[in-house]
Length: 266
Ligand SMILES: Cc1cc2nc3c(=O)[nH]c(=O)nc-3n(C[C@H](O)[C@H](O)[C@H](O)COP(=O)(O)OP(=O)(O)OC[C@H]3O[C@@H](n4cnc5c(N)ncnc54)[C@H](O)[C@@H]3O)c2cc1C
Ligand code: FES
Image (cartoon, rainbow, N blue to C red; front, side, top):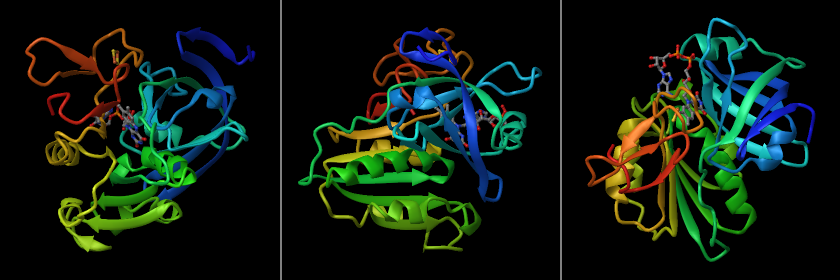
């Protein structure tokens, strides 16, 4: 085992990863490139639980894996500064290290899709990053990828060019300052394609819309967020109720963060 892997918790590892690069790609939105052995185990839609390199902040912060390069043993994360933890992450630079737990959670199911398939990706704001790896992997298999992205305004637009390498991309902004005015529903309601799978990640309102619109679709997936503590299934800080059950719950960190539509109460 690599000496930087201090211990393994089932499939979850703890590793001191190297910061390869960090860049501000939009106002208050950063792309962080990390390198380490853990990359070999990463899958699209999983997240990393990052220790804030400051002893005043005990809880790790969950951030989705945006793209994976197994050859270089590097992964990219894209995050927005929300509070103290992400502000501290934004000060990291090349050569620094980060204490990482992961790869955690059940990612997106990309199985049984080929060059006869077409999929829809729907991303909103800082929920767009995990869809990049989905687009990259499916495009490499010949799957037709259509992406609809929604942002608050022009300043918040990220990853449009990167996703356009893998298929058609529609961009909406709430205020109409870029792309089509409105939210993603303006585009999705007019798409008449039959999609073999739908992958989505975004704000709660967008997830509710996708959940309702594709409620009975056999392969429509939502990547959900919640406040987290342990990030490994033990504390139940991150639970969501299962649809049609008063008592059964699902942990976003361990059972998710990806759920099929119609499975949890949003
Ligand atoms: C599975 C998962 C994947 C995520 N992936 C990404 C990602 O790829 N990029 C990204 O920018 N963010 C992502 N997040 C959200 C990210 O974890 C929070 O923004 C971060 O933890 C905030 O930490 P902080 O110390 O900066 O802010 P804090 O000081 O802890 O909080 C600042 C504000 O952010 C809110 N907040 C904190 N954590 C969350 C959360 N988990 N969900 C919603 N609101 C929160 C707080 O309520 C508060 O209003 C993800 C969250 C989850 C659960
Ligand atoms: S954060 Fe502890 S169970 Fe999910």
